[in-house]
Image (cartoon, rainbow, N blue to C red):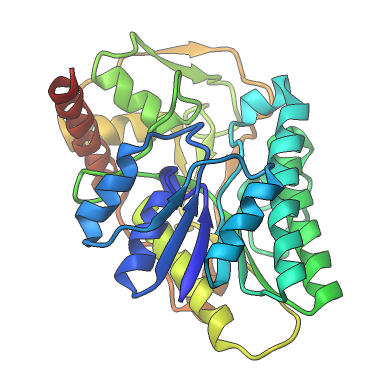
Length: 342
């Protein structure tokens, strides 16, 4: 069975492709390589022994997308293709609306015309904004006004729910918290182009001497140590949740189905706690400086993921330090690869 994975060479996408291949699915990847590199495709093949089909283009090109559907018997889609930086989304909001929503609509148009179903959407806990109560469950009111990125995720969910109900299709909306870590092989991980927007790759690059200091955006939040608290989930655990969600859609009958799941650990860790855990796990120091708060950031967010455990049989239980150890393995791999390709 062929599954389309958009953004499949990106961070979460590549790990999910590995899990799909290991579970017997055939995978078709579309990725414009705007936030990854082509060698990731070869590493997926090295890890799994299987090479997915790959098409390098922008999903806003509906004509090229149509050709992919004509060439393959696609029976489902996992959509990771989106810009994803909260801070950046505040600076270039129109780019985020165009990229994150137009590409989604183009895929759904192909699904509609071809009578396809089984669509999984990469959503985010940012749809909740700063929730009034913790932990956050799927019924927590949405208020993503803190960032344009969060708004695009909320709009994407609304588009998919309308699609499912109007055309009697099956979709799964996965709201994940903060993915971290790398594949245990050391051959896949987060590969930001330019300056990282997420905490852990910036910590990794600072520890490696690529960045002089880690910028911690504010230490005056209402948290135990003054830095923001998030729910950090190991990326391989997260990838496995996508396979479980897809299998649930495939196993269900025909008709309208909208599944919504939080994917997290149920535990919050502050920015400083992550830095300290990284240092302890890897025996390295991470110099940092406190900066002013960053626009769009919230104080605290961690998940209640009981529904995913109950309905998908899925749970993320990889310890924070173990996930952070894989990050340093990935950094060592990148350093070795750089030397070999010079």
